Length: 130
Image 1: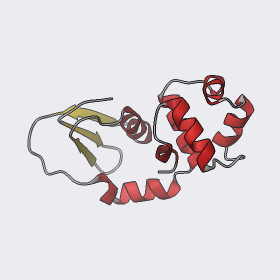
Image 2 (image 1 turned 120 degrees about the vertical axis):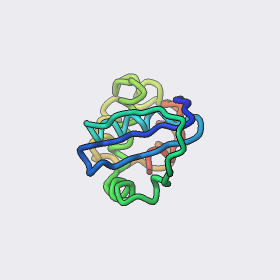
Image 3 (image 1 turned 90 degrees about the vertical axis):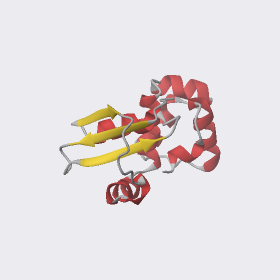
């Protein structure tokens, strides 16, 4: 996990949107997701007292959350943690074809399967449904 007192991710490509994370144990997958969603993002670690906002209150977050599917989340988490589909399948006790189908949205991800996948990835099942 990334530990930072304050980190600002700024994307000049999206109207200068600024995301500020404060505290410790900021999940690496969140930082990786923001960097992939905003290709021109720059990471700034700082100690100054800039005004912070709750990312969940931003229009960007609400739009992203509404568009996000469990299939996309699964692929993002799998690649973030550096697993191939086969490696994840082996850890979760399922087939590579099932992982592929779930990532393409062809096979639904129920709660039991979400728990299984999350355990294999070492994360919370809730991360598949954000």
